[in-house]
Figure 1: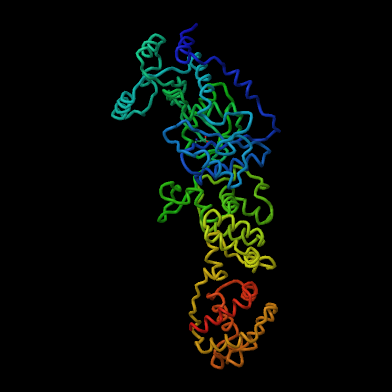
Figure 2: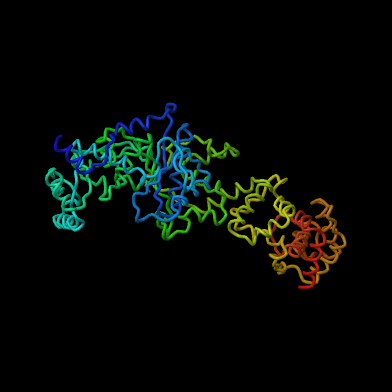
Length: 551
Ligand code: GLU
């Protein structure tokens, strides 16, 4: 046995497999030419973050566009930061937003696919097998430095204005012998395994980032940690092993990882793996007092994707909006294909923003209003009740007490409208928007338009009760109001009033406003004729009487 082989046995005596075993266990995928294998690899440390959803979407659409595979992998090597239910939070979030998962974790507890386990804490033996091989080849070694020693080195480096880190002559255990290591292990000293870097700061690594273009950085010369003292890998090492064995073709991830690419390329090459393509997604930004900054988990409620669900944004609207951020030509495509699924969009990583795109709630609102305006009442009913069931049980009871009534309400200015109204962006606006349809939410504001006096309003409402017929269509309905104009001193036509304002108290539109205020308690509503039909004559007259009594 060579010294290196002895070292490998000393450090990892229980590892009996070889990398070949895993290479055979996870053969190349049988996919058509050009199919991309991509993944999202969240750590279960909290809720689903908008940035993770965005990266997942970009990965998903990349797989879809190329007939490839999108899988999830749980990166839970940092047990200290893990939270209970963390996997569920993230996977349920992806499911809620319609990000279909081909492989990996598909729920908080279930995984599927031939390249698993898809949870790093269950892959310790795999990582250790590859580390053992590196040790045997003299490409990795144990380091017994304590945190205090490393700190002292750092201070010394800083004082001498030298780049900090475990490199070159500062890499104390780089040439540790088998005997030295054995002695320290017998003394019970904890250790990590480090890569013996063959890189030099003088050399450049050049790679083509699929989003950011050509990037040039100094080679890595740091003997960074591969396995921590508990035998668990660092992110860098697990990333190289997993993405190799899972046959990831494109690593599409947040751009906070760009600076680590020299380490990653070095690892792939040292391990004899093909280097995947990298694509680094810029973060979603926000304007804060005029300055652009990254959306922050701490400061911004919308950083948690759950925020959108709670507010009642349709998952599809959020996705549609994220697509507009993801690709500069998505909006043109959408205009040309208003009814297509975003999944049919031919996505190209090169069209992604190199600097961070700004999160624009106004735009999201716009996208949402458009989407909701295209839904028929049946669909709105399903969505709005599903939302209310989860987030507003009081409203849920109100909406479902009489589904026929609620659906009729939702059909107004929608089902038969040539141009449906674009007024709802999210379901939490609906309770207020539709309040006047429900007696226990109806809180009228009887303030009259300035040009209408109370006596005229009352007189009009009294007369109106004598002419209203629920069977009238819109035109017939308005003609009834016009018919009352001259008797009350109002112009039937707005233009007559405008030409000769002194001759009239107002026009038919003003009287319809009075009626609107009586029936809905508001000045602006969807079509009043339809509202009255849905509410029914009895309820409308009750409200008219209530207004007469209260002004
Ligand atoms: N676990 C890493 C993260 O949470 C994943 C990065 C990657 O996609 O490689 O950022």
